[in-house]
Length: 152
Image 1 (cartoon, one colour):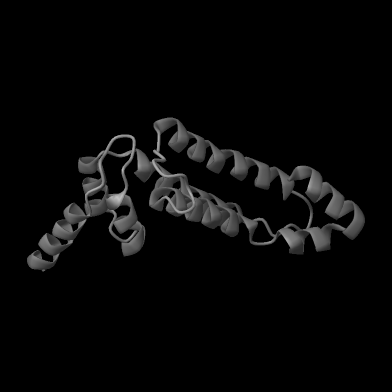
Image 2 (image 1 turned 60 degrees about the vertical axis):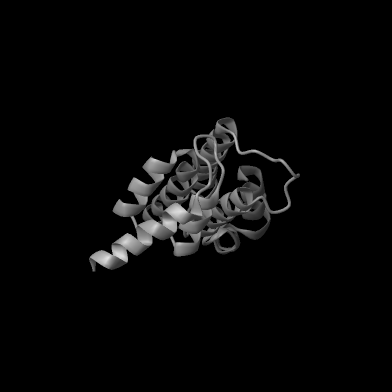
């Protein structure tokens, strides 16, 4: 990424490179989250594919490595890189990846305390996912939501 950025700056100038790389601090975390969704749903993966703790840790490392790479590649004059936006977006992606590691009780507790952090579909995916420390149980999510609705 740094090499591509350097070439864009060399051949097109800082303004062209800045424009071409603008919003990457938002798009890359979005793509990471979409990757998590695809993996948890098993879309396009071989039958019998299992999510392992090593795989989850690799996705988590991808978040931090990509953040550092993007930050260093876009740290030039006239860059549109926004540290606050990038930190927020990558932290959100890392939090979503971390949900894959939780056991069912931890996931339920996380949902109770952070219901608005992710979409209903995202939580449905996580509750139905068989992960390294849990078996999918969508009914648990449905009952949590029903209990919350009854309290209101």
